Length: 328
Ligand code: NAD
Image (cartoon, rainbow, N blue to C red; front, side, top):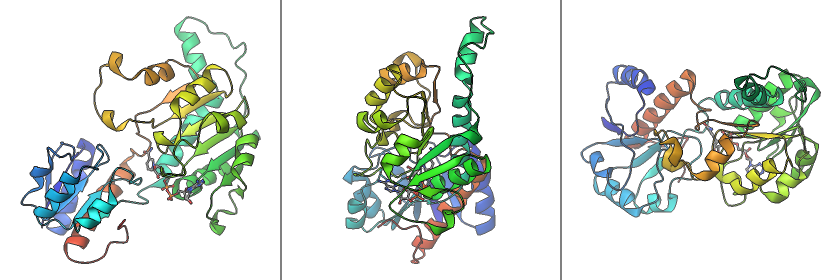
């Protein structure tokens, strides 16, 4: 079977080559994103695998893939809001994602960034770069004395709860789905209690209609002034301007953002730092804000699983079988 793989990273190559050897299938690796302009590169292949580096909402992409005889479109990611699933169905394409390639990768990044914030590391670094080695005003808290609030206790939120519990923190969570397996690690409650009681609020819901800008002026206003906000999920869950205002007015203590609204355009690109959007620049200049480029998932274990699960799904669907990861 011949498969084309878009947006391939150097770190994925060894796992792709090992999979080819193991399965006898052939993968053409390209760095291009899947767009209406690059979709033609998929002509002549049996299957297609792409990353979340581009929105795939243009009907042309689905129509062309169908005209090449494609049966599927595999996304190497958890969140799948970049696709138009109705268009995929209309064109006979099964879209798949990878629901759990390594929830710990993202959970560990969230905890790491929360720890950085509560220990005022950004402030100390800023001071030291100005020759200021003093501690005044910078006393920290200890994680085992704190309450962590999780919005969305699925794979990643659940893994985060386990990590925070292991560190001795009290963990609250809000989620419409009750998971009995998480009982040892968290206490379920409502959103308001999570917001008002937590010292660290960490969001792990998918981006969908009812979660878009869930973090806004109102919800930020309910958080403690001493609390930190962690977003390792999707930028669209947050009203960025409201977050900036809350930080500027000291309505919350700080934020860690692995993802920010409208980032897709910059995903995995080298930008001119003077040309990044103003909200990025404003947030990046704050010593109580940490920003990473949607890299929470980027561990060796996650990348290996992403490559293998995605390519296995391509083969499954092209061979006429059903994938457990089908989204439509
Ligand atoms: P998941 O589906 O296992 O969990 C999501 C949870 O959110 C579910 O339990 C669901 O019931 C809950 N939920 C849905 N709506 C809610 C609401 N309104 N309020 C509270 N809870 C709600 O997904 P996951 O694997 O834990 O991933 C979560 C998100 O993390 C993904 O959708 C994706 O956007 C993001 N993600 C980011 C990275 C990264 O590198 N930064 C990597 C992977 C995933």
